[in-house]
Length: 204
Image (cartoon, rainbow, N blue to C red):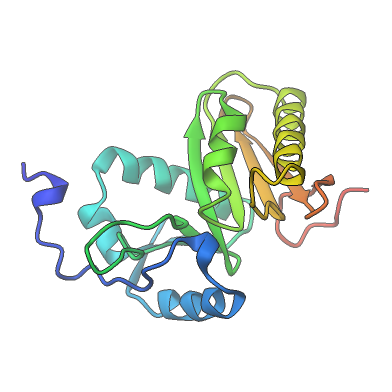
């Protein structure tokens, strides 16, 4: 088998040479339009970029598709974006989101139960995040971990040690309970739980 780094990747187009966090709002909107114009095929309701399965390591691709299917099943429109779409002229990959979900950049992370660490990694890659939790974790644990991490990030921001905009949506899927949570996070750090099903009435 040919290793991924040795494959011919001439059909991998670089759509941006910047990390997600360095894109201006106008650049993000332009990037969305160009990425949605790429070539996709529908797999189990998910729009999958044609070169994603070709170049992504098989194990990683299966994980990504599994996570995307969860969002699709809850009514969301998901584009699993082209492989290696964010890289500079020297070929270095930039920090970027895995998907466009409901028209917004969303990063996928899978973990047993390390919610805080994986959220911290993901927020620099997209506006929204899906944390796919494979361990035996309940809703209260997940929400508490997110509250602790947001509080920690706020302290670092207030001290000038970190400059991250964490406003956005965080989906948390608890695999063992087949439960999807949606936490809406404001710039102030306020967290509000909402209905994760697209188009459903908001939680009161």
